[in-house]
Every structure is written in structure tokens, then in C-alpha cells.
Image (cartoon, rainbow, N blue to C red; front, side):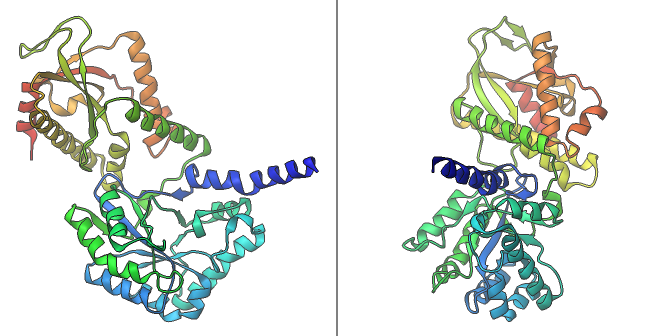
Length: 420
């Protein structure tokens, strides 16, 4: 009896638990977040179409010039075909959400796949094309469905922010607050237009206020995730990236690194005490033991997305430089606003120092041990964020990172010189 129980648990682990965890958190075939380098958010609606609420939502989106992805169920598309045509005709996007919203985890492989193949045929018969995106119900998969999705050339889309508009007992104000106050750049937001009874009526009521609230905060709303936000990665690269992102989150938790709530920023920073031998900077500033300085850290995930929005390296380089200057300006203002007048200089280790002009910058060579770890760090960053991944390591031009010091006065001069 114990053997049978263990065997069942192992089969469940292999068939649905491991594939589901991989799919949700590590698979390179899944898009979880959109472009986070700008203040974009992405609207998605599940479980429709509904003969009333879907059309009302379409009209609201049209009024505010917003597009979204509607992940539709095949059985509802059969019942309300005009709603599918209305989604298409209004310029919104259609996603495949399966046929019946059954829990994919426990379905046999053939039946799980047929849920999506059948819905594909229904959508094609109605509008003459396949759905642009796929989202399994509850975001769940099993081993059979993973194999099917890996063969597809379409984007599989999950979400990063659940509006909770599907929960009974949740007030309209709570849904609005959850979205407007909890949103981050690149969030894929989950709404519902076809839940049971009249629960999606609440979504219709809160949608205008959510759109206005997001726009008041400077967000642009769309449903066009675009091919440029989808990155194919190998298993090894994905594993490295997953471990790195966990380490990055841990770093921010255990340190006092400051990350301003501004999506145009490409820098985070921490305020530290100097502990080494005194150094003199070019403008006469003396940094001695015990002096406070500001340590700069690049937001690599933000910087890595910038080239995706430009056709040429020159355009991407110009935006990176502009955003560096903007970030320095914001940090200078932060220092003034928080009465940190004893911060004497900025410090960082980087290969981008040439972009700022050498006149105001002091550069120092790294010792052999620091240089080794910085070069290892550079390689990890290149593997994780460069589109070519590991291949890029074989072709990269060797760059020499430096320890960079910029006095506070020199930083003001740099910002004044280059600020747009």
C-alpha cells in the first residue's frame, strides 16, 4: 500500500507538479512581464466572452483608446460568436484560454491538448485567424501540455498583477486600489470579462477609474505585448537567469540599497562610509576614512530592455546616456531633499564611464582579485541579459572595468552639461 502511494505521488510530481513549477517560474517559453524599461502596463481579460460585459468593456477601452488581450474560452466563443468578432473588429487581441476552463493539471495529455486545438478551430472559423496568444486556465499545465506549448510559435502569457476582480466580497475600491497602487512598469494585469453570474459587472464599473488612475501616474496602457518582449532562451541560460534574479532580490532585501519609484531610472544606490586609504579627486575633493559616499548600482534588467526599443546601437546608447544623466539628477535631488549634505562623492565600478566625459571623472584600476570577480560578474550579466546569451561570450570585445569616483560638485557639472 505504501509503495502504491509513493508511486502515485512520484507520478503526480513528474506529470503536473514539476512541469507546473517550471512553466510558472522558469520556462523561456512563457512571458510573465512586458517591457519594464518604460512606464507600460498590459491589460488582459479572461474567461469570456460574455454577451453583455465583454461588449461594455470593449466600449470603455475604445473610449480611452486602450487595447487589451481577451483570453476566450472555446465553449463561450461558440455560444456568443458576435462577441469574438467585436473583439477583433475593435482592434483588440484574442488569446486562447482553452475550451472549458477545466483544471489542466489532472487532465490526460490528449484531452489537455484538445482543449486548445478545439478553441483554435472555433476562433479561426469565426475571424479567419488563430488566436495570437495562449493562457492556460489558472496558469496551470501538465507534462503533455508543456510538450504541446513548446512546439507552438505563439506567446504563452501569464500575469504579474491579479486585480482580484473575480473574488466575491471584494469591494470596487479594493480592486481599484490593488491595481493603481500596486502596479509596476511592465505588469501584465489580470481582469475577467466572463465570470459566472454577474461578478464581471464590477469589472465594468471599476475599469474607467483604473484607466484614469494609471494614466494619472504616468502609465501607458496596451495589450500589444509584441514579439520584441519575448525572448527565447536555453534551459541553462534560463536557470542562470532565475538564480540571478533570486540573488538580486535577496541583495535588495538584506542591504540598504535604494531604488526610487521612477521607471526612467537606470540606477539604484546605497550610502556608505569610506574605509580605505585617503584619495584625492581631480577637483581637490579629499575622500578619507569615515566620509560618506554614494555607491551606484546599475539596474541591469532596465538597461537590457533599452536596445529592444531602438533600431540601432547608436540610438540605444544615446538613450542609456540620457537616462544615466536623468538618474544622476534625481539622485542629487534625493540627497538635497533628505539633508544628506555630508555625502562627498559618487562611486561605482563600470565600463560605461567613457559615456560621461573624462574631465570630471576620476578612474582607478581595480586590484587583481576585484578585477577577477568583476569580470565574472560581467560575464553573468552578458549571459543573462544579452539576446545571444552564451554565444555573446565568444564574440565580445574585451572591456576594462574601472573604479570610478565623481565628486558631488563634479556630478552637478556633468548633469548641467548633458541634461536635456
